[in-house]
Length: 170
Image 1 (cartoon, rainbow, N blue to C red):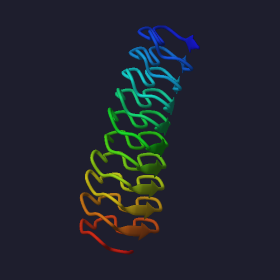
Image 2: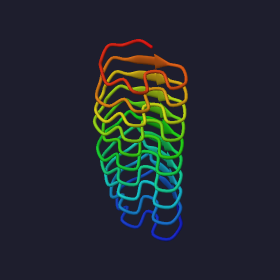
Image 3: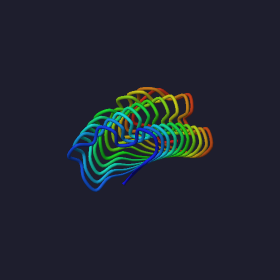
Image 4: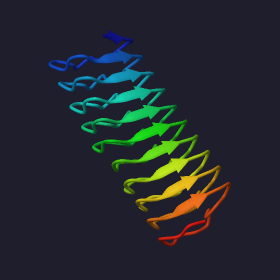
């Protein structure tokens, strides 16, 4: 089902897709089982399957990434090839192109680009993390300025927000 100007324009073999919104899924060629709702959501997806993107520009740059859920304005915007991510909130995971991350809250993990297996929950949680992996940040601004360290657990408002090291519990 394609509704909206240019939605599903290039779809030739993909099946079981739902694209709603201007240019939603417009580059899709043969990917299946996707749901893209919102202008430009999943716009560059070509072969990535089993994705659900909801919100303007959610997952817009995704091309081959699979099994992602991006909900919110610009959520998962830069994800191109990675899978198994769940982002909920405006700008959550917007720079992401890594796998198995969970980011919930506006701007949660916004700048994460190559860090894998992170869980960031709360507004601005893990916002500046770019490459740190296997982190758990829970609370508003928990680990918000953290960049690069891995295997950390920060719980509470602004917990570990300036920390850049690895293997800490705050």
